[in-house]
Length: 304
Image (cartoon, rainbow, N blue to C red; front, side, top):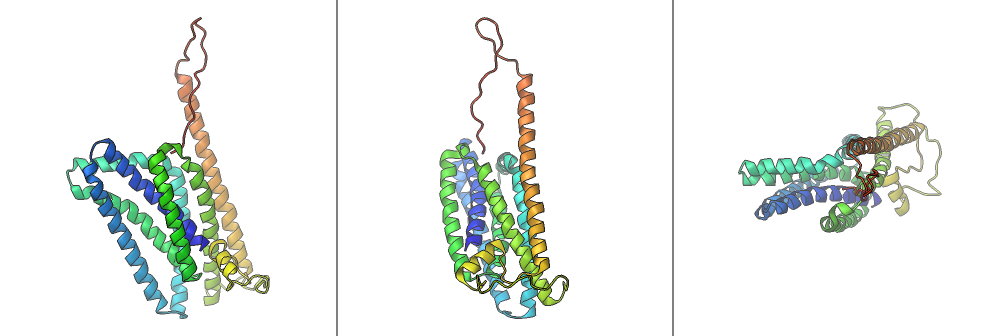
């Protein structure tokens, strides 16, 4: 439940940001008649993502308990972990340029006088988020109960819609940078759990016969099959009988990925401060009535 809640919250907010940027730009240039094209593209993307996820999940579940299902689950875990990591780092690096990129692509579609151009732009942008969500959700469904996953998805999506409304009303007054930083760290914890699940499956298949003895058995204290154990497993990668390789991969990924992610954020902030200092030094300082120069007091910088 917790895993799908965070996934749908994060992906929902990102998709909502894309739609909000497109709608705000169209409203600003007086092209509100194209709102319909954007909504059609969004609807088509959501239908495609939902249909794809339903078909894949139903097909794989028909092979329940087979070696083929285990192999498919393992591949899904690995793909989800890789895409999740890449997506989180990409968003951190390109968040500030996302708005300008979308506006330029929207203007290009309008200049081409193709009404379907805006719909296609919305379809591509939201469809990418939808397909990413499908991959992550499939990975969760293979490792937890469907009922809990669906409940978490519903809560996360509802939360994303609320945040989307707030974004549309308040816009730049929200500090979305901190929001995505916290969510990004949580998603890396989830990715570490997916990698641990993949290692467990690979060892069960006999494809990774190293460090495959359980380090401990904590099933009596907290079983994976219990309600709370299921939540801990699906999001935090909890195992009541982890092998040494599972633990090594889990901890190693978390240490490297989180350190790199937070280091990237610190580096971006340092470069922005340096750029602001350079631009400030190049601007002549205002002078008071007696001719003495003094620094101007600027207003607070708000994150988009």
